[in-house]
Amino acid sequence: MKPKFWFVIAAVCAGLALLLGLITVFSTGTGPAAYVDTHYTRASSLDLDRQDRAYTSPRPPSTVAREITDRWQPISQATDASGVYLRYSDDAVVVQPREQGSVIHVMDADRAYNRYHGVVAGFWAWTGPSGDSFRGRGPGAGK
Image 1 (cartoon, rainbow, N blue to C red):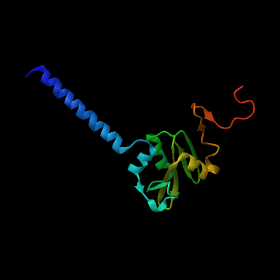
Image 2: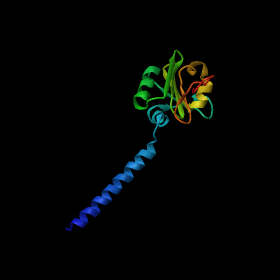
Image 3: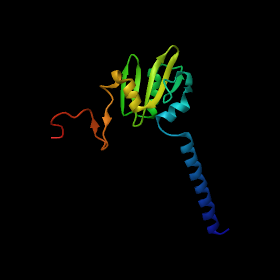
Image 4: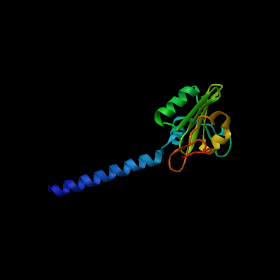
């Protein structure tokens, strides 16, 4: 067989491998919301509203939060007796205790901030459009 034949076979195999890789990446989704969706049990009856997705786990909140943060590092995190609050660029993941395990809420970061302001206000850093942290700019800022 001619060497050209093997190059054609190699190109076809590489193309198929690339196609399968792209299908795998885009069908499973990426980010913390997709991770929660694939690793925890969906519980629509526990949704707080139409823009919240609730999930459950038999494990305690600290364990669930560790599982999520081991895979997806949050921008900011707050923890108190009511739960663990993880902020990502667009989403927030809130892990709270439930009678047997945890309930995990995935929602937009802004909505989560408004809902849990009393807990996360001093912990969640907000970034500006240029990527710098914004925690309030008083007189003399930027001088």
